[in-house]
Length: 169
Image (cartoon, rainbow, N blue to C red; front, side, top):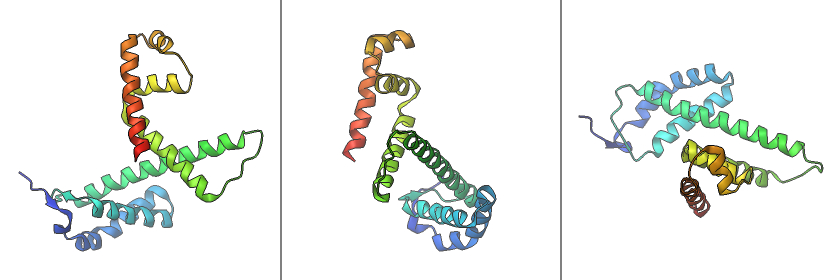
């Protein structure tokens, strides 16, 4: 039975010195960019430092790679979302200019919405998007998805509750 220990009980400096070079090289191979690899390697250790408790690490490189993969996925997701946003802006009839701070806030908000949609579950997400993006009525969603009207309402309540919780943070 493994024991969960506070992160500070793990010798982070030893973990860093023994595995940072390996992690940096692994990330450099994935990204092809030294600066981004260095940033993600640092972010990986920061993520570990931010954890309250950690099970003793039998395979530290595997654990670090798992954290780094999650950060890579977040990075790719952010880039795709930002690219889609920039393309949508470019298609507007009137050019829109905004300060860097406003742009960053919009991207962070879009990422939060994307994370929210990702954790809703497939049916709840589909129902929510049909209601919000396609502006379908509850009855139309029910017919399109072949589910009952109470099911549509239940899933929308779940989605709206998640949105409210996101707005409260």
